[in-house]
Amino acid sequence: MFERVVVGIDEQTHGRDAIALARVLAAPGAEITFAHVYPAMTAAAMTAAVLSASEPPALLYPESTHDLLVTAIRESGVDANLRWIGSPSVGAGLHAIADDVGADLLVVGCSDRGRLTRTLLGNPTTETLGEASCPVAVAPRRYADTSHVIHRIGVAYDESSGSERAMSYGRQLADEFGAELSAFEVVAPPHNLLEPRRRQFEKTVNALTQARQRIAEHERVEAHVACGQTVEQLTGYSNSIDVLVASSRGAGPVALLIHPSTTAALANVVRCPLLVLTKRARERDAALAR
Image 1 (cartoon, helix red, strand yellow):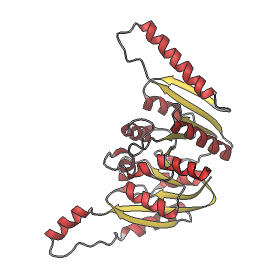
Image 2 (image 1 turned 45 degrees about the vertical axis):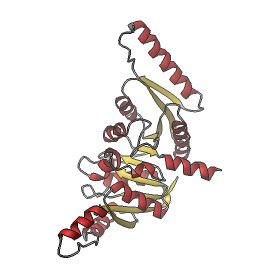
Image 3 (image 1 turned 90 degrees about the vertical axis):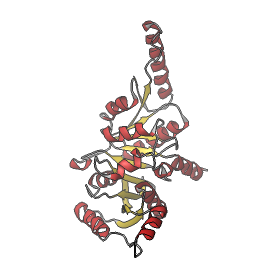
Image 4 (image 1 turned 30 degrees about the vertical axis):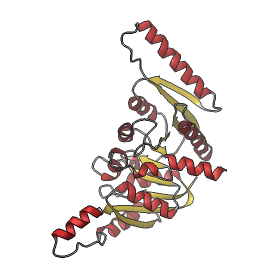
């Protein structure tokens, strides 16, 4: 399904988990690019450095960048193109590379120490990737430790236009991999604590019933619903699927129809790969469909 895939390579893991996920998602014969973003000064920082130094600071990329990407190729055995760029933002750098090669998927790994996922999903000052023109896939930790086959595709659903697109995208993936498709909607728990418990219970049951009915309106989709906290419930759901498809609303770095910080939390605990459809990716697909 994915013909041009960009894989983010970080210093700590050499992109092992991201590469493993790219292998699973990329179409046979796909063009794969290993990309690395090395720190670069902002214009303000560069001006300050020039004013305070006797000689202009060097602007060449670190010599280790090429070696890092070559090492990733040697360790993975993947025949990949190499791209690197200097940027004060990892998200902006990967976004630029993905746009330049015409990528239809950007894959990154989840790392406690790596600035890659932390910057892409968890730093509110970096919003560029939220406008990525292709979907973004996040590999969970240690994904490369075992082999993977996609049998079950899951969709984070809430009846919004974005989640409807995620449902359609999930169906395409399911057809491509011959996988089962399911969807999960989380209903918020009652907030009015002054309301009688019986009334709270009735409202919750009604909300869950309606949520299940909304999903059931889609053919060949197994419905799952729950009441509780979004991250906790979706994390539990991720134990039963091989890929979780979600949609962003384009309001932040990568917002899973909710606050960006929730997306960052989910990316750090989800048990399966998280595939996020950005707003620009949805708009691009809609334009191509016309």
